[in-house]
Image 1 (cartoon, each protein chain N blue to C red):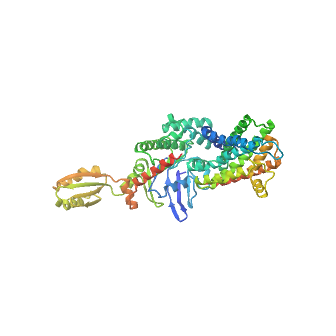
Image 2: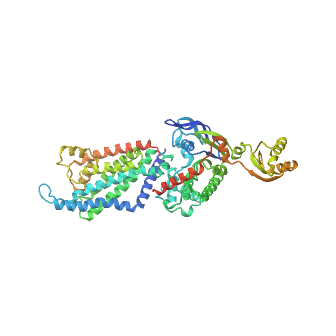
Image 3: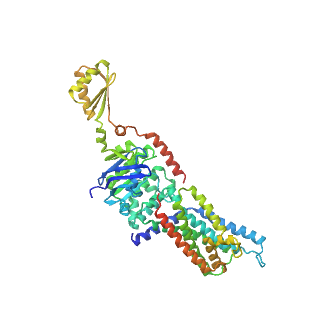
Length: 255
Length: 332
């Protein structure tokens, strides 16, 4: 396949995701409202109830990077796993029978999904700013968006890999609850990870989302427990591994 | 290249079931070829192998000169496929579905635009082109799928049960489109069906397939003729004349087969309608009064029963599948 066709394939799959995304307004509102509820309600509740170690009240800004990370996780996993829907409703056959490389098909799907995840992440970033959360710098925000991209690619690759292996859409619900909740809760989105008991710390450090949240926290708020260069390295390795795995499994997929 | 599709001993086994057993067919370019058989006969499996969706377990197949296993991409570029179940993206408009298809097959912007216009007018969907597919009826979705299958000017088009689950009127429309595109676009068509009438009306040649094997292959007329011709039934006033009448037809030699019951005589002849005057003349010469005459042309049903030893469960199957199809499209 020529380079031209490869680019065209990626673009086609991206375009489809964009058209579908623009038509699902309720999905966008739903996807935005969950993290915002967390931010406003949980943030206010935490600040009124807890004192930070060493005095001072809990600052709800602390939650913002975690919730952005969470929405990127949801959106990108969904983007990958939506292949199950494509199979259920037949469109997957149309893609699988086209004279194009499966790898570029899944890459296009991934870039499409990550675009929607970033749009959602950026919207939350903006709304959070409007309700009074301060970011350290403009460049920090740009770097944060780059982090969304890298971690989004990783989770989409994971989603595609799972979708290629799952037989039915019933399995999808199970995966979503068994995967997303632990990933979010074990990511340090809601609590600092510096003073955890050993068993929890191990789990948190094995969770790729932790590094996404930590990197976002560093770039947006200026502090993090894990050094930012470590987070970036882990994220990049995770994303490359997942997109390779997703591409490989999708290549073997049957409609 | 002599044939658009050529298979030799193509076979597909699933675990311990042989879905397609050593089938060899040759379809000429421009031909409208039908695979007729009951559900589970192996039609869809055969189409899936020819369209590179699944790999054969044995034998080989060439589609437009390319090997389906070694040259899958070249095969894909040259074929269009309309699957049994819908494979449209129902959140997109008809035009968007066609446009994405054109992009995947490497058509440039100008070609896509022109071609979308052509295929839309071919299936008469121009006016609804910008509506979301979800709002389409079953017949419109099928027409859009056919249009999409034609977008990239395929040489060979596979249609898997193209009118399954559609009402009789829509079915006739789809038949018109299929004939039209076979003629106007010159595209070779391989279709599967379990509707006798569909195979009879559309196909240049028909392969009757049962239990993964081809049991008969010819054009519809020859298949029907192979049963010995048309059946003329004569009703007699006098049951006592039956033997006498049979004897006189026997002597004349005009009939291929002669059978009788109490007061009726059945004669199987070629060109039934031309034979009726002669048959009646013989009867009046023998002085035997005839009270009724009827002519029945053998149908593909008869052919099917002849070759497989049982009738296709047409009604039962189609109702069940119709329900399945509707449920599928509703779940979205």
